[in-house]
Amino acid sequence: MRIDIYRRAEHAGHFSYLAVPEGRMIPEEVVNTDWEPIDRSVDVADDATHLADFSIDDPLAQIQAKGYAITSARNLPHAVP
Image (cartoon, rainbow, N blue to C red; front, side, top):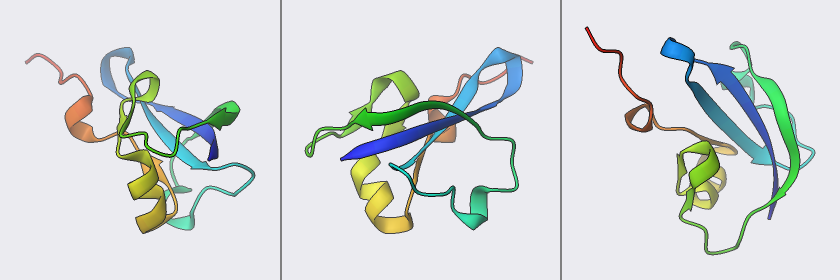
């Protein structure tokens, strides 16, 4: 599968990432945030369970379930109090 990657700024200079099937629009439920396109036509293996460069777990399962895959909050570093 080929995907397009978007990112948005989080705290402390970190980013979360959104993957959608190549050429598709960002789904309406996530369009209200500031996603910027960063990569197009990224090849993803049919058996991929993690996209390390984007901290996305189970990308194909997420895309199948909701039309996109997103970085889990648990994969983002937490701010130190």
